[in-house]
Length: 249
Image 1 (spheres, rainbow, N blue to C red):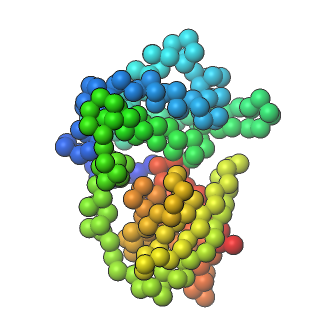
Image 2: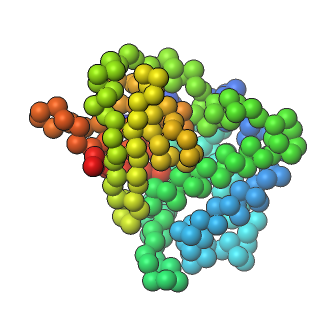
């Protein structure tokens, strides 16, 4: 993937397939019971809340907004790779003009990666709560598989990286995207590289896809960049919400 949005030839590999955890979960009509819950979680995030209040018909037509969102979600899951790709591009283009100021005078933009990531996460939480209340609660492994698509696929791409190489990446990294500061600490535990600073408090193990690219089970990837001497100078954090350039401190 050369940019934030995938190329058309990459759509098929990124679209949920029939029988996958995401495909199964969103086809269960009982999960609509927590759609309103997910919507309220979304607007609780300041950037999303301000954007919706100033640009959306959420207050006047909350159910209409919810159903339009569901149209997009179900289109990306069940409409096939081409429709999923076009919806992704359309949604991103729509959000480029959503920007403004909060009550405290600070600026916000709907293009903030954390805002995209938050909305994406609320959809998953809605499914988790829906199964807990109206079906069978999902195990930790099932939740992880739902989030990543399939843990086994990540494990299949795992490559062997020497501990000497892994030690090069240990350290503290931080960087800005617009006004958002990301802080990530890389550590080595039990021969595996771990990242601290994601959506969970604990250190998250990273699965090596090459000597320089590692991916967490949450679907966040890190590409480590070195200077001419071989010293690690930064890592590029890549996730569904966007990219961060994190410089090593």
